[in-house]
Length: 70
Image (cartoon, rainbow, N blue to C red; front, side, top):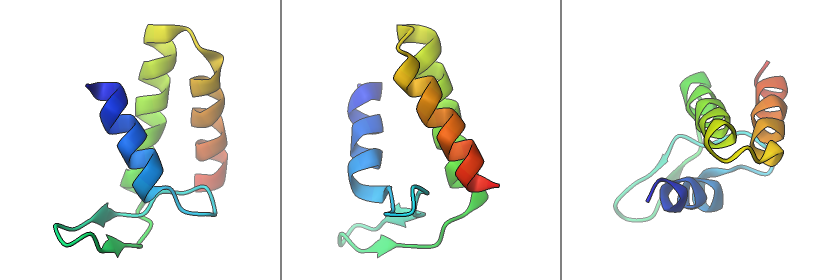
């Protein structure tokens, strides 16, 4: 279930600049504000996926997102 939610966020809220938009409302409209807390949630999600799977791609994603967030 968590992987499904993770994929949904990446498919619907990841902006072309590599940062995450705020949310998608019930009508399917994307709020394109890029708040720092949205980035930190996905950094954390990637770190947790790395810790549970050992797949380095998640750690790489976390590091890349952290760099883009600065």
